[in-house]
Length: 424
Ligand code: URA
Image 1 (spheres, protein in one colour):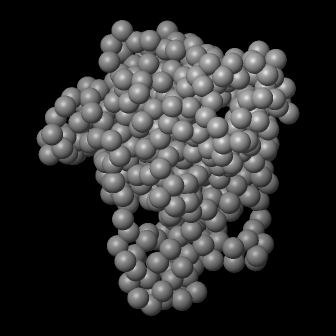
Image 2 (cartoon, rainbow, N blue to C red):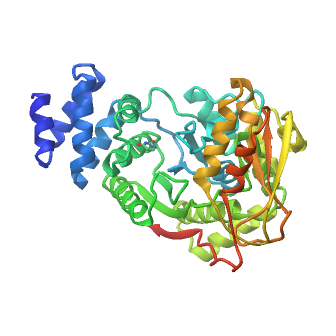
Image 3 (cartoon, rainbow, N blue to C red):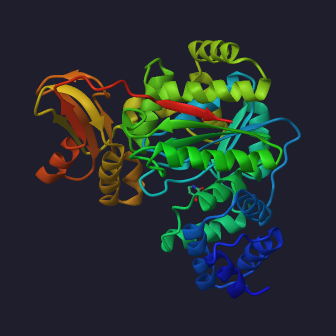
């Protein structure tokens, strides 16, 4: 086979065979295909797409480029396509563990403006994100859930391809995103996989239409592979909780575990209910009751167990204020009265990224904001909108930037629809 001919075939919008796709992925990993050739191929896929069979073959070729994890008991897995202040995994892990459903989760770091679970877990001093398979397995068996960083031995082709896509403007392709995500998920050995596909300003997929298309592609890959894969389509136009930034998001997760009701809890409940139905075959009503009962009984002790099992300190759970320890704490107030009609997730994420870029690596996790208002709230001029935690000084222009993230209108806005639907 010649890479030139296969690139040309895709340029001409023709479908590639399984053998051709396997050949491309294997030879790229073995460095027989250059970055120039692969970039050209990825751009052709970006522009001309792949059909369902090609996308599945691509996923399997990428999965086979690394190891596949095997457990001798049933586990479930969950994946979010990424959002702003999306800390559902931290809440979901103790809920599933207390429900007796084992969660085996490898997570990533932040991509672009979306936060990463692994970065948030490093807020707990000593939390070891790199675990051997035996350690991962033992924690899941003993505690019921483990969250570690993506092993470098899983879906090796994905790492190489992702790095190239990131440099060549070829991220935004549904077959490439779907095969990238699903190659890693299929390699994780869980037969039950729940995807949280987000749409909106703070998500990879700006529109509901594209989010549903991506979800259907990933669910189809799972079905072809004999797995149960469902996808919750959820709103990411506004941050999911009041914290944005690693320490502030963990602060918010802990407040939620201590009884604070918010959108983060609502979306996590939806994920837990779906996973419970998928894992046990129970009807939705029973699952809702079980999940609510588990949350009402308290999940914080299980969360502490999970953190400690990974070597993490639980000091910040008992003393949340330790998470808000920056040299400057600045509150921004509303310049008019009205209703909160928008809190732009993308703009707030960019603001926090800027705060992080101004400090040393050891301080980035502490830079962030805590929102003081939620979507739909009625506020008066002078009310606090947001508190900023930073080790640098803010300019007037910085303060205006953050104030502009909030849209205040005289009329109460429409109710926010958090969950669009579940694709099965
Ligand atoms: N997340 C992934 O894992 N892969 C993509 O291609 C995009 C988001």
